[in-house]
Length: 176
Length: 420
Image (cartoon, rainbow over all chains, first blue to last red; front, side, top):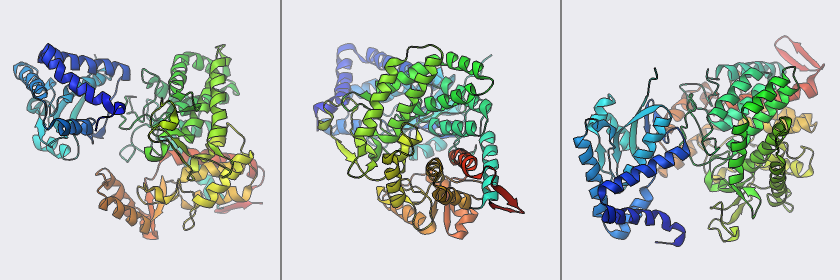
């Protein structure tokens, strides 16, 4: 399954596992966030995916194939991935702005959310990650505070997740 | 050919172009609230060409400002944008957009320098020069030195299975775009000789590597997965797409070689023989067996207009009338669709996609619209009407047709008109 030609995505995933072991979840999380911001700066303002009015969502999971492959190779999701997701969820629980946190269904959601949020910010928009779905097991995850902030219902988000993977409500920032 | 109707469609096409320009400058691909209510650089650029052909230079300039301001940091133009110029794409790189924007800007520049306000638009080139530099830089960043061509993942049909690699439309657009940048750069005293050299190398590669002497036709694509595969012969996709595709006419469309060039004439002959629809007329875009026939296999108005223009250019009035006349006959209330199919082919497509479980939810509205359109009762499936792109191509083809064949020979009799 591994060939030198396609080694990079797998190397990155193993890198995340090792990074947690070497530096801990907090630093790894910051590292993933900073990669997302750096890449967003290169790509510039905007959004990726399909639209339903002011809802932006991904019809296919950008990391689905890689994550399923990785899970198949290792037989399970590495515990370090789960630790990272739990860490972000703890930060969210302690925050007074829980709606700004991602609805994480996979570890790469940390990177994806920081990339998407920063690209939106460059476009003078704020995005709320109201829900996401795991490409590995199809489990839906919601950010209930973000759903409330976005003026949506869980059912609405769920319906979009039936044919999508990561759902954002987009709000343009009003300038004075 | 129904000349009176042809004139009415021309007038309506100009209205359509104007009506579908957002106040911030972007041309919608189809009207707001319909299937393609975004700004796609490819459609947008052709709309600019249509606006220029109709003398709408103010609209063209506004459209160019919009798209140049929407350029991404690396110099790329995305697959599509929202009306504010934010990237709203969902597909991989489509580098022909870079070529097309530069090509359209060059056409605007040519048109305005011929007008009394020429000096002002040299200023426009000066103002936008950093964008031009980045756009050319991005194209050249995607050039493979071994084959001398620009690599792309998607091109005009947004169909990587046949367009991933060194594809002819994208290469012609990019080559013509760089040549336009050279022309504009020289007018403001920029050193652009290296771009000229690069463009000539690409042109040479198009003529030698994307032309088959034995088939006497340009070919669609050298399939190569990775841009920097060294050598490309070892690339996993390494192969050639030799099937006929309507955009094999691109070297002349983008004015890299003459419409009279024997390579173009024989390519057009192959296109006509293989893609002219035997049942309902008009030009199909590629063979039916490529299997991606959303809304049913059938002829496309804007490609038919492009080839009509070839026949105008080569003084072949009979063929020009056949092609343009088909577009005129197919218009519904002076509106042009993306493409036209038959009920049978529409249902075949629906069956194929349903069985294969690849019918996306987003296609449901299109399906409803096709079935509720008045032409369905005539046995025809009109897919996405109006689409702005064919109106722009129609303006270009019809105005050239009129200038060449109808000047001083046009008589209107009541509701009809004919050559005298």
